[in-house]
Every structure is written in structure tokens, then in C-alpha cells.
Image (cartoon, rainbow, N blue to C red; front, side, top):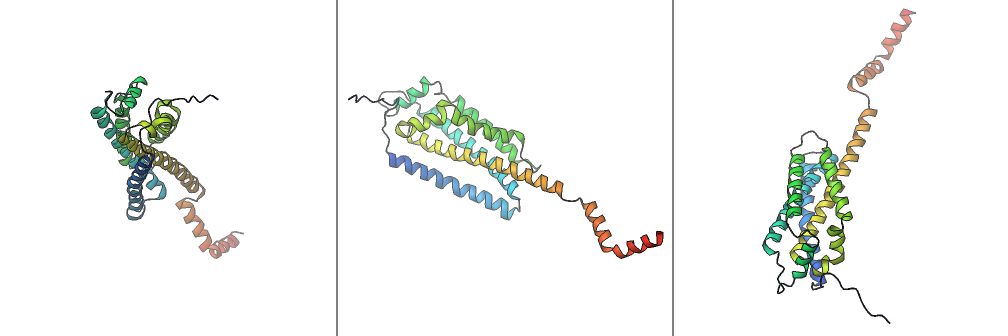
Length: 226
């Protein structure tokens, strides 16, 4: 019997319960924050559901940028390929894939902060196209690019540093909120537009009310003309 197994590129040195605990911690951090934003905008600011979704998407972009900034700082401080570092294999793998630098996370930091800030300052009521495209892009590209989410699922829980795992959980939640919220806003706004098109205009309603309330007088005038 062949008992050979394929070894992981990174040795498994993490505790599964700790990784699960980090997931719960990230979830507990994100859920109350976005719940507060949603409740505040919908109830206190009296925004529509579509408007609240737009604010949630913009807030998710800003949060995603902040998390990426923390990741940049962590990489800058702790990128260590020394053999005595228990996570040296992780950093070596990073450099083998050509993503060991901070250029990638720094780009996502700037892009998310700029797009999120512009959307928060958007007073037009409808989400900007760049925000819709950006949130959709990062959700799809994260799954499609091999060294992003696919690699995270294959080896991240086993041999990535705990802080990196925690930050990636936060990034996942931010991106999920962003893409769901922008498309929710898009379809809600489109539905509202179609509904407004089906409703009569203010002038049309006034004319209809005039003819309804003055039907007897109009019938009298018609008889006189005849």
C-alpha cells in the first residue's frame, strides 16, 4: 500500500480552536458595528432601505481599507524568513509567489479608502458606478486569483500567523458586506425607479382629481354644448 502523502507547502502549526476563536472574534467585531450603522441610518436619519444599503457598502469599503492598512503595517514589521521564526515557511512562500511585499495590500488600502470616502460624501442618493464595479471586482477576483482566497482556504488556517488569519477574516466580512449591500441598493433603486415611472405625475393626479370631484358640473356643461 502506498502511504505517501502530499506535504503542505506550509507546515501545520496552528491550533484549530484558536483559528475558530479568531473567526468568532472577527464576527463579533463586525456585526455590532454594521448593525449600528444600519439602525442609525434607517431609523434616526430616516433613510430608505436603499440609501442605508449604500451607506453600509461605503462603510465596508472604508473598513476594508483600514484592515488592509493594519495588514501593511504587520507585514512591514514582522516579515521574517529566519529559520528560528515558527512562521518562516509562510513568509518564504509569500516571497516565492511574489506577493511578499506591501504593494498589493497598500493598493487595496488606498482604493478602498478613496472609494468608500467618496461614496459616504455622495449626496445624489444613487450609488456611484465605480463603487458598484469595485465591490463586485474584489469579490470575484478574491475567489479567482490563486494566491488570494484559494490559498487562504488551502493553507492559511494551518500555517499562517494568527494575526494574518484574523485580518483576513475581517477582510472577508468587509468584502461580503460591500458586495451584498451595493447590489441590494442597485436592485432596490431600480425597483423604485420603475415604480415611480408607473405612478402618475403630480399634474396628472391634480387633473384626475379635478374631473373626479367636478363630474356633475362637467356633465352639465356637456349637455349645454349639445
